[in-house]
Length: 454
Ligand code: HEC
Ligand code: HEC
Image 1 (cartoon, protein in one colour):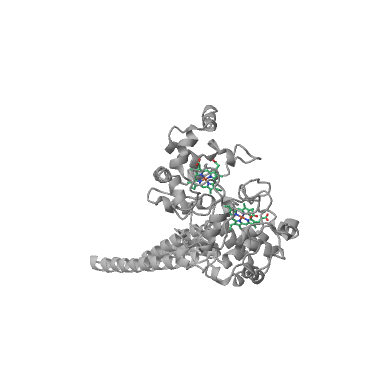
Image 2 (tube, protein in one colour; image 1 turned 90 degrees about the vertical axis):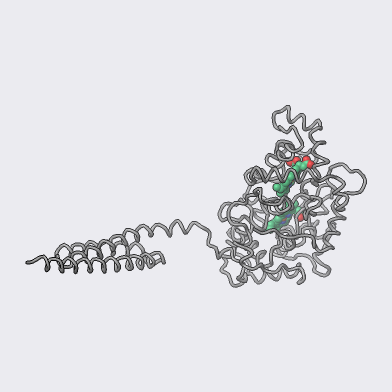
């Protein structure tokens, strides 16, 4: 045989080999797509590996087609390897909360109960299965959810469906003495457990759980914000999801979504119902995805809204006009007074507090609130623990804290008087009277508020 014949055979093999290469690549991509799309990945992988071995063996047996068969066999082998690898991926994928569980487009009545409950859990906590964290609803700022957790800030919501049925028989409920006794004129009062829960969310002032009223209000006024109004502003569908979770997690049967809707429609007049937010504007049920962190790029006013300071504090010059759990923040006036107080000096001596300047005081108040607790806000059952959340230290970059502290230190008593949050006369930094300005603000329809979503 001359060199010529050998050359054609080799060339034919090279062409066949290249075809094999292309077929192999296309086939492996197709196989991987098929298996990651969920088509029985383990069986597929096994089949591919067997086929690869068979093809390679054939290639060994038939020298003329060796290159083709070995190439195809090789890529089939690779596909098999990829397929078995991708078989493990879906399991890790399953741990991530399904996005549609939090989606807000679907009507509550059209969602399966488990999905609706998941959506409610996301709205409360921003994550599933942990009973902590903080979602759009911001409830864990004030409420505990685990059995046995005590907080003087707000009642623990474990067991609330059963308790709700009892509350409506409470003499204090039946003969209300609170600043407001009907959600709106003609709404009437709650007559069932689900109505009680709906009323608690939409008209906190309609009944105040004993011991949890605004300080000095004699339990006639609630520090809880109206959940369907800014800044939290849940839609009725979101509220239905929250209530569904409250029942489901007790192992109780969830009330039909239509009944929950009827309860909310009893207490929330049509004009006050929040519009469902477009999907794009509200990722994952409006709750921010991942941990909430404030950075130096955020404006202090936005941080105050985003971090929920607004739920507990009034802050002059900002949209935080209603918070009634903590003191009004006028740190230009108050931080120097706190530092100079005998109580603060005692905490320094005890090694608990460490601030030497107003700015250090404000930063310490945010990242380590229990270092020093304002005497008026000491909780009886847990005197060493501030009612303010302990984990803000993990939610700020240093720069963000620095900017927020500077901002809070620029606000003085005069600003509070100007914003109508304090009476004109030099007042003590004790909790300002709430009822009047709160009512005014409610009458004004919360117009000043804007919800900051990420
Ligand atoms: C700023 C603090 C605060 C936030 C935020 C808050 N609550 Fe409340 N909540 C309270 C306080 C204080 C009470 C008790 C006073 C009262 O009865 O209004 C209360 C009462 C309740 C009650 C009645 C409890 C009972 O034992 O009768 C329910 C139900 C409730 N809240 C649900 C929620 C849900 C759900 C959210 C989130 C969507 C939420 N709350 C957000 C402070 C808060
Ligand atoms: C759950 C309610 C709650 C939330 C949310 C909250 N605080 Fe507070 N805060 C309190 C209470 C109650 C006090 C008073 C008790 C204490 O001194 O620890 C307080 C005290 C403070 C003080 C000291 C005020 C003074 O005049 O001495 C500062 C400053 C402060 N908070 C800032 C913030 C900032 C900033 C945020 C948001 C990042 C925030 N708080 C969120 C409840 C809250």
